[in-house]
Image (cartoon, rainbow over the protein chains, first blue to last red):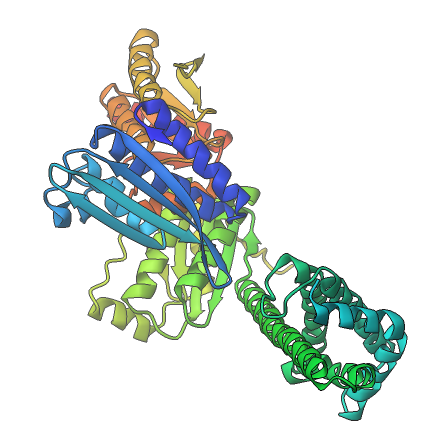
Length: 126
Length: 284
Length: 126
């Protein structure tokens, strides 16, 4: 789904809620995944100049999981190390969203190139 | 439909009951537990599903195809039933493999004049029964794993009960090593109970926790933070001298969490904080 | 865009958040509250989030902001009814919301507001 406006951030939460409910995740796991999606959607809309969220159901043996991709063609992240450190006390920007989301999910992958864009992929297993 | 399928279909249609009988006795010959009427019933349902697959022109080499879905379902439930009863996976596959002899015998009787066709049919059947047996073993494994997981979960839940110590005071005695899964569960259960009972104080007793390292301390910290976020507070009790030493030694900052050596002390503090006074009336 | 209604009860303002808010709505709430405090001379604010299933870093920061702003305006804010899954997720995100007072429910929240005001009165008398 497209991530362009603030309303899209709300939509992404609702979409992920539906997905996690269908996959029968526990309430806490649902909350964590939806919250992570909210953070990353916001990053995409606010810092990435808009982009999209894609989702897929993944299987690993008997386990089922949900994988979300957040992609934009924005400015990219110049200093990955910095972006991924906990930025709560400085309270600004992408920092909290990225590092915080990482703790909320089982798998976290980020690819970013300055001037090209960013793609964050998160996975939560049941 | 393939010739092998047709041949087998005809055979099973005419001789079904006898095949089942012979199958069951073939299985019993091997000696096994859990013999009873249900073995015959199981054999019947497997054979029916098998026949369905054959009539649907199923190919044993493609056991995942739709043609065999009825058979797969039946094999799953037979396996699960056996797993629950405690049979071994060997037994379950032996049950399936015992089907070969009765059908082999019949195929021989029908096609003894044409060895090429006989060989084809025997091979085809062998392939099918082997695949089915293999499937039962796989299904069996999955069932056992599910049972084990469920038991682990129950054990986890049993070992971290949340009790109401007093009006507005809950307690959780932690016993054993505090790992991530355990702490998650305790956190969720405890928080839920706090909301349900409207308790403002939770006492987490770690007398039964053998060691506290940075990781365990982090888990405890997270639990307390979550409790405070919700509007309640937490006391950690049961801090043995060795643990206190470890905490200081590791430089763990307990960030203003109240700690008490014993559950009794914690309760005393909790009562005070919630405004209760305990008095002992003078003996008359 | 929906606006969150603010109710007045004596010298307290009550806010019940029941919808999945857009970022704009949250910012609007902040403004509305400050304006209303000034207009009514309220010295207590109770924010009920018991219906909120997701609190991400944006909302978390909003709550912290409101707490800070109201303090400057000489009022106290109490946030009540945080759901367990939300608390767990916020901790994992790394938001401890220091400085935000919380209570389990509206009843306790009101008690907290009352005692906070008493403390204030005592201080000013001294």
